[in-house]
Picture (tube, helix red, strand yellow):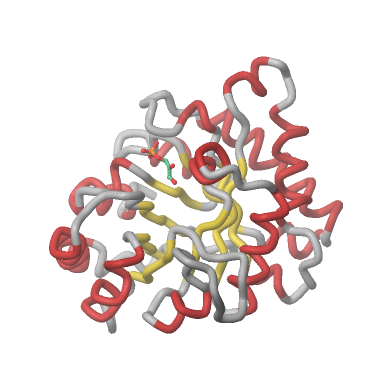
Length: 252
Ligand code: 13P
């Protein structure tokens, strides 16, 4: 059985005190959520304090990105995966579509970041997803397949235990236009098939695949009923403790 993961990506929102307030408000609301792993990803500057304040709770903290570099050095503005681990992060998101779109990240960059995260003992949440144009042209599957093989290139069988894939169709992010549970399921099943072909049936069976894109308290239940949807990566609705907790505590 795959344990679901409900992760909140706070993107570039919240000062340190707002991040701490939200995390502390969330803590009692999800304290009984043993059915899933709960993860929040604040901005870099809040990770240490939020992680400290959540110590002993069932909420894990993630970085939203990390450097491709794995040795300290002259890389102004970069943060290494091992530095995230050092301040209490246990996960890192890589390859988010906003990074691909606005910061020109390629599959090669994403692959380096994936390796960096794994090397540092982090669980990597690697994002894939097609744009609206790509979907309309009928190339959604080939785009996602390419992102998967590029992003996961060179990983060993044991590395795969530390990988979570998040399918986030770009057209559903922040638009209020979520993929239907059936559309999401179709792509998740495809991702699992690709994973089985590239790696192994066992690794594919164990792989947790999250859906992201306008996940809200009122659509999580339908998404989670799908056989290949193993959780959610939530943006906007994760910013408020109450709505994120409703998503975590979806009706099962
Ligand atoms: P929204 O939930 O705001 O659509 O964002 C999704 C997302 O990008 C999570 O990483």
